[in-house]
Image 1 (spheres, one colour):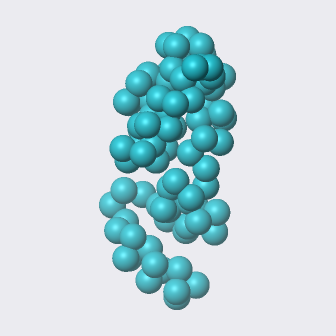
Image 2 (image 1 turned 120 degrees about the vertical axis):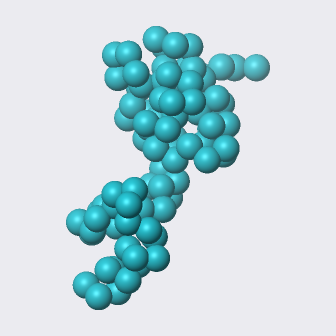
Length: 85
C-alpha cells in the first residue's frame, strides 16, 4: 500500500486525516487535536484544509458570507441570521 504523508513532522498520512475527518474532525485544529498534524512547522495545514474540503465544515458557508461562526452561535441561529440578510 502506498502511504501519502500529509504531515512529515509527525508522520501523519492522508488516510489518517481522512479517518479523523470521518470521525467528526472538521477543521485543521480538530485534526491537530486528534493526531498533532499541523502543530509543528505548519506546512501541512493547507493540505489538511484541502482534504477536509469546504463541505466538511457546516459553518464554512457562513464564514464565506461574513456571518458569525463562533461556537456560541447555534446553527439554527446562524441560519436565521442568514435568512434575515
